[in-house]
Amino acid sequence: MKETELYLPLKKFLEKRGYEVKGEVTDCDIVAIRGDDDPVIVELKTTFNLSLIFQSIDRQAISDCVYIAFPAANPDTKKGAWSRNRKDILKLCRRLGLGVITVKFYKRRAPFVEVHVDPAPYQPRKLKRRKSMLLHEFNRRVADHNIGGSTKRPIVTAYRQEALICAHALNCEGPTNLANLRVLTGLDNIAHILQRDVYGWFQRLERATYQISPKGVDAVALYEDVISDIIRAEKNSVLPS
Image (cartoon, rainbow, N blue to C red; front, side):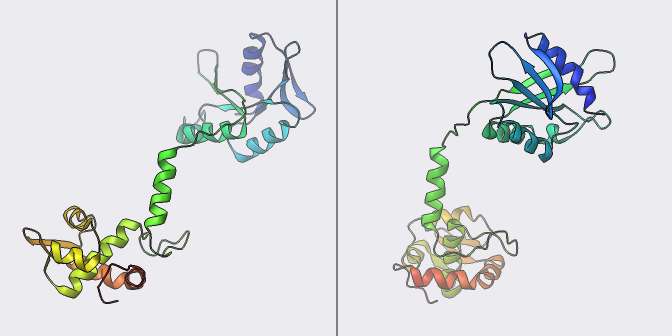
């Protein structure tokens, strides 16, 4: 497919809406004019890519009404960036204030032009719950045990830190009941951590009594540095570091 194959379907689409349309006007693939409205500029590519975004952002210096346009699917594979990442593409274009148009081609009928987003100033909707979760997780974590981008070991979340303290306590004391573990760790949610056993670190022996599992022993060794930092920082813990 060539970019030129997109031109006629888009030209007809815009003309039906009262625009006068011309191609390749001062480096703009399509320019459409209707009365005193801001010029509509459409940049064409055979697939969604960064080059298309860069060109369209540059056109925003001319007009606030800039669209990107590309085929809804690759004519050969019937797939493409649009089919895989539609939500992310629309989110990106809304943030950049760009409109999005796709053209769907058929063997026996005219192409179908669809406008998914119109250009508009971006006003992000703040998600208070996600912000609250972010701050809660940040404040619950003790020290900083994760290196951004590293995959050597699982991320040390606040929950993992608390589970590690439980595992360390059982590793030190042996089979222990909940009441004693609560005193040793200083954790009020000790029962919840042991009962959920997200990581498979604990084994229930009898009611309210637990011991560490082989996985838990391995975790205590792997996260030895984390455990030491937490115990030093936690005033309520009476465990040995």
